[in-house]
Length: 135
Ligand SMILES: [Zn+2]
Picture 1 (cartoon, rainbow, N blue to C red):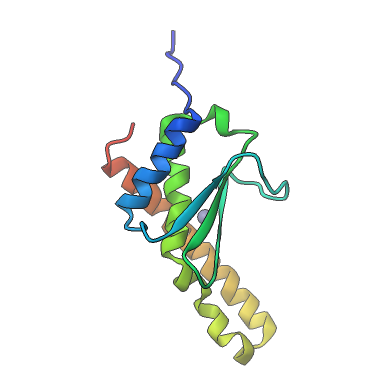
Picture 2 (picture 1 turned 60 degrees about the vertical axis):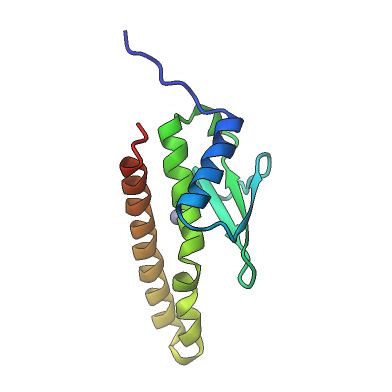
């Protein structure tokens, strides 16, 4: 019989967010956890809104699937979203050249840039969680 992995609780999720905010050196950020709000357009485990000018963010955890997450899933998804705080400036760098590029060129560059950063954030999140010994 396969053991069923215990599911993560709200209290554990709050602890995971605090733990990784500290580990990633993001203590200056004011991160609000949003439990019941969700943009139905989003096809994701979680997403994060960041202020452009202030270190404020809102972390949204998919309420339809959150209760099915294992602790390992929760760590991976939370770290992924928090890493997007660390990459805020890198993600907005293309705004600097938007007015100087043809709109098509900018759109292609923006999509490639977004895709590459997303890959980096995701691989880094999984690796950091692994290095932290979360199983
Ligand atoms: Zn992402």
